[in-house]
Length: 345
Image (cartoon, rainbow, N blue to C red; front, side, top):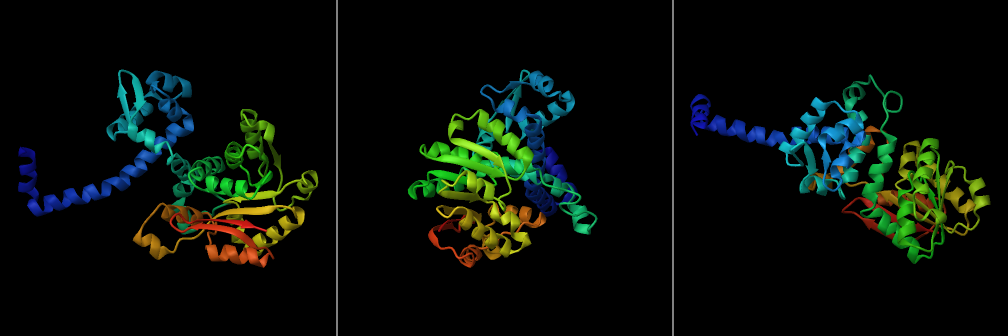
């Protein structure tokens, strides 16, 4: 109390209250950056998952297992203890409920943001034109896949799996399959389905095959390195495909113009004439709506804008499908989360 009175005597009551209030307002912004940076470092070194294991982990084991600097590790853990995410006692660190909740459904948000962290590290250079995305800086592809896969389990995967099941899909070809996150979900949700994944990135396909080797449904899944704009060979090998899925894949090419996607949809119809096309895509939220209700789509739109990815509206997706000479047989657009789903014939 004496210290507070001394501050009030020096600054005056009004100024003392104003300074305290403004620092309190600033703290969540600064703390969010610090917390994310600490969690990302633990995530990348594997320490985070060891902390999240039942019973937590010994600090010495964390340090030795990841060859981590003791002082830096202890600094990070002390900070996370202070903000109520872990408890460090007796040489052990264990996760508190707040961290367990953050690393449940929202974990994908942390991983996806980590994928874009290199962009923010170079943001000044991008802003001044000293750096260009794609030439001087890239996002972390591994964490784009991991983060997106985690987030999509909350709604996109259940919606598309339900659509495939109800429309009788039996042999599913997934475009841009990444680490097989959607196909693994689908194989579990629809036991009768057989799945084929294609991805153009060779290291991703290698990783997907490692994932597949440990999967209990591996007898019903396969993965190929292939460009989704050139699937003639896959079509000859798998004429039985009756469902072609793409989850948040097509928008990656919209920066080259809508005709790129329109042409692909036409080609898919030619390659797989028996198949329904299942499209799950982001649908741009009006900025006025986000201003009124600043959801995580503000960050989502920022990440995509900074990396030259185009997010378009549900109306434009409908127009592209029509321009390809195709018809929508079922549609679900969730404006509240900025995502749309189309079954196309």
